[in-house]
Image (cartoon, rainbow, N blue to C red; front, side, top):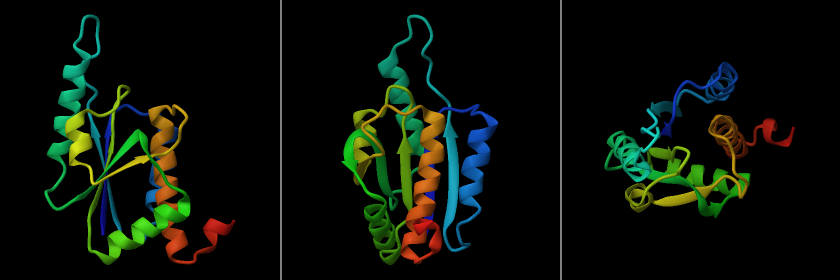
Length: 156
């Protein structure tokens, strides 16, 4: 199984990169994790924000294969418990699916990304800054994997 995390934004603080790397290195070799950063669209003075979101979405989708199971991280998506995420991961593995998770920029994803998504997932009803989203996402994917393996990490 391959999991691609496609996230808008770059130049994250070192603690974010280290946190994400720490969780990704814990996965077994048969689960490949790929992290791809997409440049933030122009949001300068007088910028067309909708155009920036469209450009970001086009770039996100350019990294998605036609066979990928796509999950859009969306505020209005469904909330999943860790156990539900673990169930989903197990199903994706059993079905031989590669997964692409789309993390939008500060203004979210556009309709093209939402339409391409097989599922929409909300990490929280709270507004979370993008650096923290990356770490939470990496940790929750790892935690869900530990649930599927009956690994003690989840119960710690």
